[in-house]
Length: 172
Image 1 (cartoon, rainbow, N blue to C red):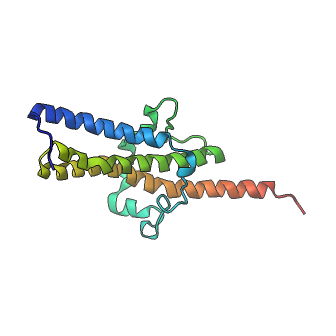
Image 2 (spheres, one colour; image 1 turned 60 degrees about the vertical axis):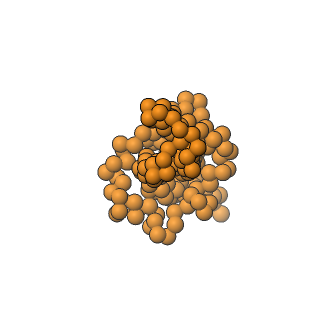
Image 3 (tube, helix red, strand yellow; image 1 turned 90 degrees about the horizontal axis):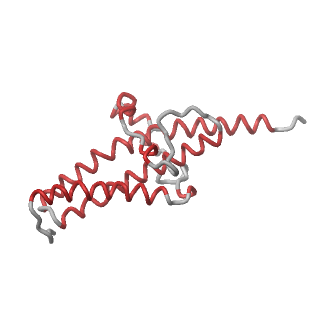
């Protein structure tokens, strides 16, 4: 339902500005949510049977061939961000941090998709579909990469935990 009418130039500027604000706001919100919200075992974040532990994303989308091209948004937030591109520390603490941040990244991208409808306030109704398509194209690759990577890191984390447990079991 279009309410505001602007010149074409201002409408284009507003679209760019609004998408930037939406994406930064989603990231800001997720950065300030407590870590306990980002449990990789929760229903929203865990791998579901149809995903086959993330393998569906390689089979259908060939994620391994393009995921390295995605930006690492954690690098943008100096103090609160977490760079996920090159993991070199495979300690239990760092793997746990990676899992939390992978969940945080996924939620950020889902939240970035949802407000596509606000463009309906100043764009023709037919343009709302263009905004939805843009939001999906800009965010789904990042979501797919997170959903592909997380099960692998979760297995690695669980193996690290079991090794640590075995190492700490006293001899009888």
